[in-house]
Image (cartoon, rainbow, N blue to C red; front, side, top):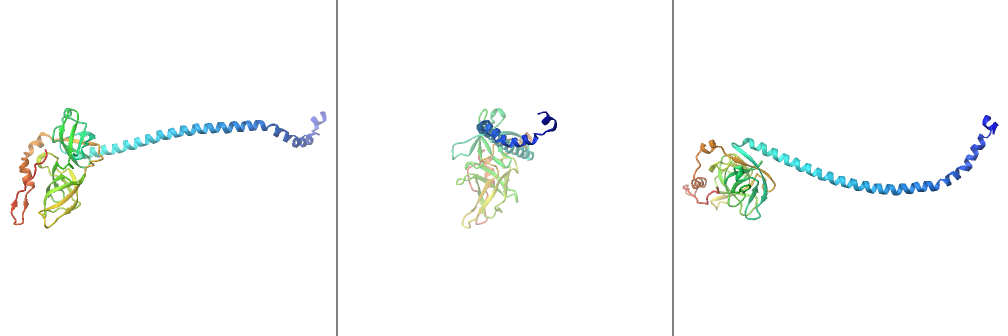
Length: 287
């Protein structure tokens, strides 16, 4: 032992014995390693299940927040467009929100969250960022019902933006969300794609505000009037944010409001086959 400690005579012997004892150490360590493996398998599976559940919950919350952010971004864009649309309107505007739609399939009306306490009055114009929507026909203390221009009982004085041709646009009786131009003579210059704007007749709607776009013009030589259909520019079925227009006293006194019957007679003049002017009677414009 003294010689081995001083001169290392048994190093090679110990090195050789290491080969012989290695399997013994390996076999003795098997139970410990098996125990650790079993623990790792079961613990890892439990941890993975818990982590998977947590990740699933976090994904669900993240998806909800993403949808909320998309909704807020869309709403922000609509409000921005509505704010930009007010620049070209003379008079004060009051933002409002559509909170309900009439359940009557034969009545195109919407309920807004502004009423008499906010200064809303009957026949007040209702607009959205894209075009004219309608007018108030029933005022309640905190809410109001608005009649849309697509209602068959509503008539809107319009003119073609391209050439100033005037007409009366009524809600279609056969197709939802469409307008029909009444008493358009065969000689009037109207084409598909023309934009219709409010003419300001009757001083109900602001002048030159977008109303609709003509989608078809059919002129039958055997009929006195052409069939003209238009699509409203306002997003009737999807918009939620709208605005009410308050005209100033100067605007109201600038031009006296014509009598409804006289306005209708002026709009409905047509040339008959003999070249004489004839008057066509129709129901008055809804105020």
